[in-house]
Length: 118
Image 1 (tube, one colour):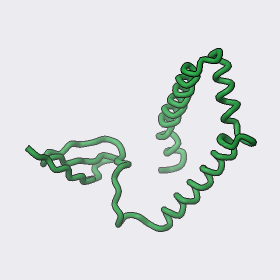
Image 2 (cartoon, helix red, strand yellow):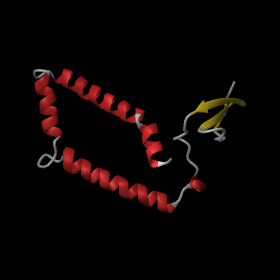
Image 3 (tube, rainbow, N blue to C red):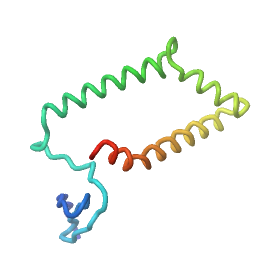
Image 4 (spheres, one colour):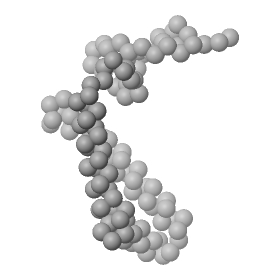
């Protein structure tokens, strides 16, 4: 038996979406960030995206990656010092710190959206 996946977005109350799979609708709660409609795209939005991406990439390079100006090497050395030279433990610590920061900031998103008026 073959299923065809037809992805439709139906806005209901709030940010609810619906996906139809083989004729059966599955209701989702949250935003559908993976949905892309070419007709809904605007040049101004893509220009803003390009500017933000360029600025963030330049800042990332200067502040983190570039050996002469960035802090990436010092951060890695500090974590390696904390775990007494165990590179596996240092990598696990980096992943744990990233995960905690990423999840923590994602948890603050709804509050930030309220502050920004979205």
